[in-house]
Length: 363
Image 1 (cartoon, rainbow, N blue to C red):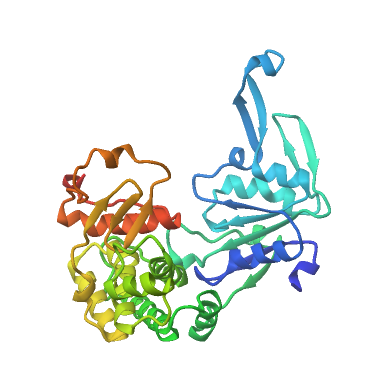
Image 2: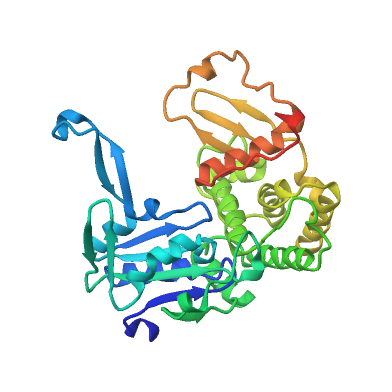
């Protein structure tokens, strides 16, 4: 907040998952400022930010075949919005140079295609975030002349108590012991990766607080989905059937559900059996349970109302013509693919992107 008192752009640097972007988003929300978030990469160019000529309907554009379309950055300049540039140190040099006029005393942007200069509104402000250069992934050190245009703030990593407080606030219906066990499991995996005990195949890997929240989102969804009576554990199903709610869940059941969540978020990313075995042992250590309880092959079923794979379920938005083609409610899915399919259903339900990686023979 002190840095925002200066008429300069603000750069936040810190490890993934420490809340850099969410802090700016919440500040914009609290101060009633419109925030435009732009994710930068090595493939981003100034056309993506400022706009370009695009095809249009000639009958609606005085016979012209192309029409200028403003990019997100130019729209923010015109409207006086806040702009959040994520992953600044992944951007190309040409993009950094194109931002100079916005960041210095000129506070303007020139569009050659329009032969026009746009001045920044007094409410326009630029924020940027970046992970440390040693995080890898194509990140590079930015020129000092460019960094001098920012007020730089370094965000320290949050402590386990900080993370637990966040989880307790967001998921107060789940046992606190479960939350601490997932946090401890994530810390154990991070240490193993940093010490190069695991993750040599398919890396670089980054496990952070986002993975913890994804695990808990899966657990929370399983425990609160009213349509999961056919896929949820029997004791939980009976409790929901006769009481209408899931109250204090038996720790044994929660361990099994947590195992399924960790399998989807962590184990499915690992490429070698050695790494997966390490995760199994870490789970047994942190949760005091045998992972084999949740390693059973999930059952896949489809009906007119939705698709169920293990403890994951996705509802059909309308009557499924595909479901009507099956006389039985069991899907003929290979056993080796069912666990992956269960993870995909969890990802789809939560709006997460899926990246399918495998040998060319596995297509």
